[in-house]
Length: 374
Ligand SMILES: Nc1ncnc2c1ncn2[C@@H]1O[C@H](COP(=O)(O)OP(=O)(O)OP(=O)(O)O)[C@@H](O)[C@H]1O
Ligand SMILES: [Mg+2]
Image 1 (tube, rainbow, N blue to C red):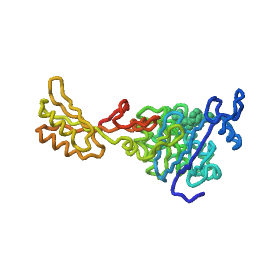
Image 2 (cartoon, helix red, strand yellow):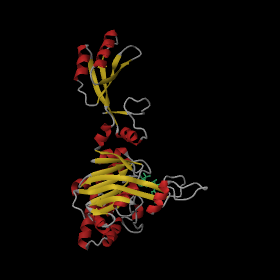
Image 3 (cartoon, helix red, strand yellow):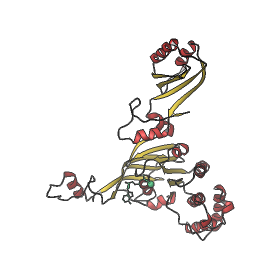
Image 4 (cartoon, rainbow, N blue to C red):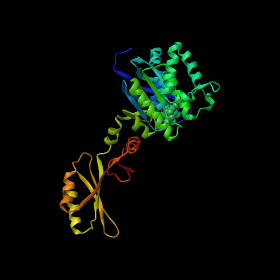
């Protein structure tokens, strides 16, 4: 064990899966049609590495604080499940280090398992012919919980997840949402300080997903648990997590609060100002030129109706700009302001921008960035 403040820490974590796919980097050492093998393939042979392989994780560095709700967000095949499986000791890493509650996932796996509980989407393991409560009692027995303690904990968890009314129904009568809640109960039976969820709301309808997210957050707050979850649902990450890491092809490309992730790639925002009863004329043309000259303004687009009504302006500005200078010019020109809206990039925009091969830069044509009103 190492004395650390982190619930989870990974250092240069690498995982390679063997594959039958040809033409991958790291192909095995062989003479192909009499060609001389490459230097890297010889080096791999010396190191005893087999190939070809898929690099599911390519040096992942993460630090998750105790009590934090931390999300790993990434597209399909990014390495999210692999990372979770390494953290719950189901899969061994090929390089680097990973610590859970300060314990090494390879050398101290028993201690790791005492501190962590993983919920994987495929993991069911419930008997269809037992009731929800009986299923939990079975697992409590398996986990070595004492009778009284188990009963109390099961009652508490069934109430917490809102399953108590249906607790004595057969598991086969449960809906997907109820089955998921029972999984949550099972994960919480042992009362471990760290919980890992792989795609916690996959397959749930929007209302059940929102309810499930609420339960997870409440549990993290109430019981001070560390929650580490993977998702490709941006909304979920934004809604639930204190911090998120974006993983792309086995590498962490960004790690911050959802808000900061959103802002770090975008150095501008759009301010949309709507006017009351104004007709466009040459005076306003000059006003637009004047606004365009203000420091921090990147561009101004007027909104004029076909009938000549001056409906408003869209002004692209530095993201931290003080808007009073713009509003000052507008008011000096006698325009009455109806509404002011700021359009900011969504987390989805940031996600797409981060995971693109060539990072998007503001102002670049064809950036494909959508804006959402706040
Ligand atoms: N058992 C395995 N054997 C071989 N390759 C694997 C294995 N498990 C995962 N991979 C590969 O490793 C890479 C990462 O897979 P992983 O399941 O971790 O991604 P993921 O981010 O969880 O994706 P998804 O969102 O689809 O669940 C993928 O290229 C996948 O094909
Ligand atoms: Mg997965």
